[in-house]
Length: 235
Image (tube, rainbow, N blue to C red; front, side, top):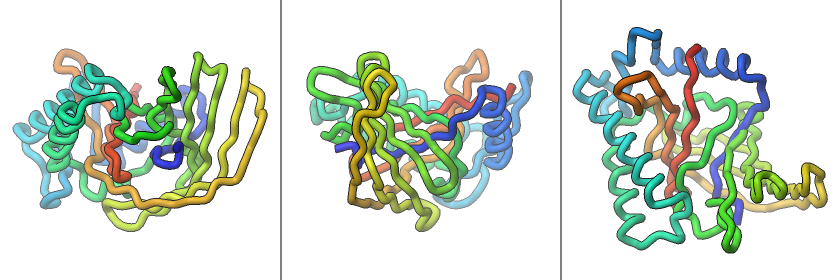
C-alpha cells in the first residue's frame, strides 16, 4: 500500500538545508529578502511570466487548497466523494499556474504530506491510526516514503528511485520496505513495482499576506491526488 506515495529526503542540518533550499529557490527564479516578495514566477501552460495579478491568483488557489485539505483531513479515503472532488477542483485550478516543467524542479530535504486520496497506507492511514507521512530525498535518484505512527514508535520506510521522463512526469521504481520499532530495524523486505506520476503543480507559493511564509508546493497524480509541501526558509 505504501507504493503509491511520492517521496524524498536528504538528512541535513537545519543551516545546511536552509542554504540548499535558498539555492534551490534561486534556481526556480524566486528571489526574496525581508522587504521583498516574489515578482515573477514561470507558469507551465504557456511558458510566460505571470504578472502580479496572476501571482496573487496562484497564491490564493494554493492557500485555498491547503486550508481545504487541512479542514477535510489528510486521508482522502475517509472523505466523501464531494469533499474529494472539491480538493481535485481546486488542484485543477492551481495547475494552470504551475512552474514550467515541474517534474524537473530540484528536490531536497523533508517534504510533508498534506493530503492523499490513495486508499492505501501511503496516506498514513493504518486502521484507526493516522501517521505522519514525509518524503525524504537522498539525491537526484533515491528517496524514501516514510510513515511514522504513535509519535515515531512505529516507522515504515519505502525505499524507491525516480527517473524524470519529461517536464511533467516521473517514473518511480520501488525497491524495499524497512520496518522500525522504537528506532530499531525489525524487518526489511524487497518490494517490486513501479508507476508513473504526473505533476499537476510545482512551485513556491506565498501563503501569508502579512508575513513572508513560503512553501514549495507540489500536487501529483499517481493516479490518486497527492498534495505535498516543504517550508522554504530563506534566512
